[in-house]
Length: 283
Image (cartoon, rainbow, N blue to C red; front, top):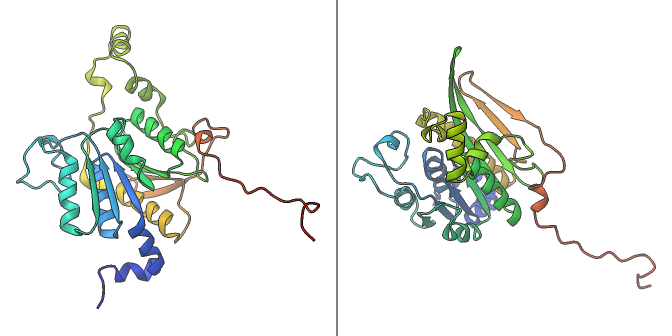
């Protein structure tokens, strides 16, 4: 009898499909990008999915929250929506839903139990913290971001995917993080009040609330899942950075990494096997 993954086995082989089933993947952020990622991971047959996010369903995010039906009430934790979604796709997949931020003790503990992390967050302050966490634990991180920008030439939209491993670098040395946004994100309430007093920036202006469309999220998330698929199954080496320019309909592969990165240096050092000199060898 043909199994549900027969067509995938034609690409990955049995070994690749088995590796997917044996892999534990965490998705940090259960919004527009994270919901798509969870959906695709379930269909791929990943064995365990950990979903970490303290956000809840609202009227304003129903346009892009995969798995949110009309029957779901506002205020429902997004992680619970996605737990239900995975169960309807493949009930044999183990799902851990953590309705907290990844910075919480519960969130960090959950991430310590996985093999790969997918970052699907809105803000660069949180991205930097997740980047540091994954480097310290030696966890591969696949970070995704979608964005839109309106200027005098029209609407620009798209996103990017970054793969964080010892070979590809990290979000810091790949130069994808906005340092100004990080400073604002990680500032204390007093520091934010100082910014408002000095520059006249309101508290609302410090949070990103631009356009968000399900189809753009779907493209970016799918690109991220493909890189995870490559990382796990070995069908090719994952690309360090992909930029999706939706308004121009192309994807660009980026190779740009600084040397001597602080965060990359946090990774656990590989164990080395002591070598035996020729003088020490037995005859």
